[in-house]
Amino acid sequence: MDLATIPKIELHVHLDCSLSYQVVQQLRPGITEAEYQSQFIAPFPSQNLGEYIHTASHGIELMQDRPGLQAVTMDLFDQLAKDQVIYAEIRFAPLEHIVQGLTPEAVVEAVLDAMTAARNQYGIQAGLILCTLRHYAAKQSMQTAQLVVKYHDKGVCGFDIASDEAHYPVDNHVQAFQLIHDAGIPCTAHAGEARGPDSVWETLQEFQPARLGHGVRAVEDPSLLRYLKEHRIFLEICPTSNVQTQVYPSIDEHPINELYRFGIPLCINTDGRTLSNTTLQQEYQRVEKTFGWSLEDFVQCNIAAIEAAFLNDHEKEELKTLYISLSGSL
Ligand SMILES: [Zn+2]
Picture 1 (cartoon, rainbow, N blue to C red):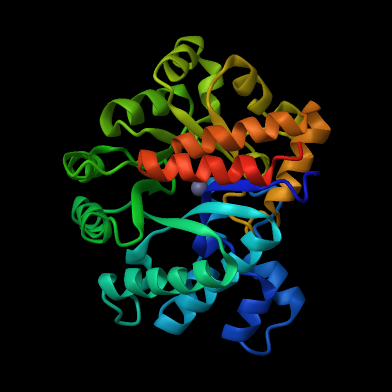
Picture 2 (picture 1 turned 90 degrees about the horizontal axis):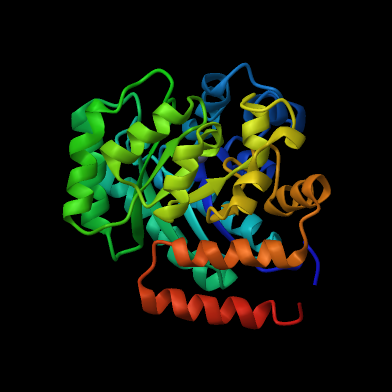
């Protein structure tokens, strides 16, 4: 068993940021590989999170009808299979896909139907997280949360807030998160990426997520670190993405190892496979090379990911048993 074959859990991957060249060719015939690379892969480094996110608009354009949404979903499962991912939580913002007249419900159903087909084809378990975006009005945020409630237990497993925390406040989204909590549905939230510990504190206070997307800049505040550890707030870490958006100048200065050794539960993710031109195996390899992690460290993170997954206790136990049996040769 090595980093290529080790079974993996991925909790933080954006559907609209993970289009392979093959699926883009299928949806936009004639595009050259050079055009694909310049349009779909974000600059490295990107000037900031805003420039990184802007690159996703090319993928979103191709995901405005049912065939496009379904092709991109199947394509992502193909990538997950090559990475030996056995359970994934895939996320996207459905309200970004209604430009050509699809209803938000039709958008979600297109992706869920493709996920059902892909699960059968690839044998990968997966849940769908619906994202509101920081710049959304309160009405859009609430509409997204209502979609989560409507499709929960039909394949939607949770709620998230994504996009630019540095330029948009939390105010528009507090009620949406309240609706999610009232419905007993788990949630995560992007924070501590483009802004520091104050944003993490604010996010924890206002949204009360069980997990944080990134959360890495918590490392700047010892009292926040203690809080995360004590309350078992799980961090979805995406190393290359953080270097690309210049949160850290290089992987060597990324705090993943410090956070892990401090005892904060976390796992490794790709964020945007195409935007960051990466795979989960490559993320593991970078962490191994930089911080000397052993296979046992990666297994421990994957077990922690299962415990933090948006599954019920029974499903978690089953997944853990499967994970341990698949990685049994360690
Ligand atoms: Zn993200």
